[in-house]
Amino acid sequence: MKSRLRVLRAERDWSQAELADRLGIARQTVVALEGEKYAPSLPLAFKIARLFNATVEDIFDPDPTP
Image (cartoon, rainbow, N blue to C red; front, top):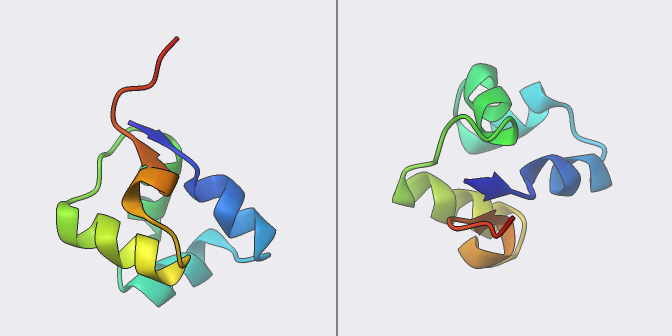
């Protein structure tokens, strides 16, 4: 799943650990999300979207085109 999470985090100058703390998740989960190795659960996706004041679709693209 394509994600803009890394860009959004960097725009705010947050570390992966800080983002993890804000979301109540492990830093390793942030690493997996940013590395596109893990698709978030729906509740986590909505939590991320609220944190960045965006829609889930603004952050995650489930079907990226090549």
